[in-house]
Length: 192
Image (cartoon, rainbow, N blue to C red):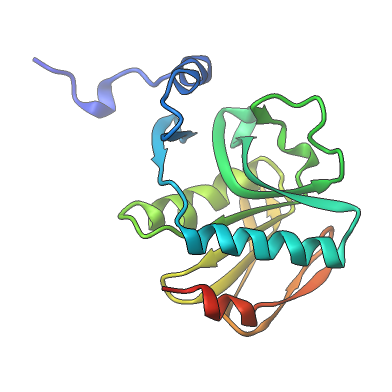
């Protein structure tokens, strides 16, 4: 008799990292809540949104850099591995880090929703919890499904205490330690 999925032993972080090292380059894997997750490859509009956000961050905060597709140790006690669409750190903040960086230098994690069945659970539920548990001060979710931007902040006890959702086109205040206002009007041009 085959054991039920919930009865099978969970994979360790070390086993996941070994699996991820041998995965084909066309597949991005994450380890969220003890489960291996396949992250969809970014489409052109997704990549343009990250490039736009990199430019905006550089204009407002030249002391910071938004790294695209960066691996982070997340969740409590660094037991998760998330490949964030963007991670905002001080310039040089990833120096000496490996494939999966400690989250303590991250000022903001960014995710842009994908057009797949798992985006709700992954980007709107699991990622905020994992990033908050890792102590990342700000999580920015660019939600292409409903053309909104959601800013999560004030991480405490594994979740964000504050969340603000605004439509594309609104001015969005990114709180400390990011501390600038994001004009999201250009996002309207990047939605399918």
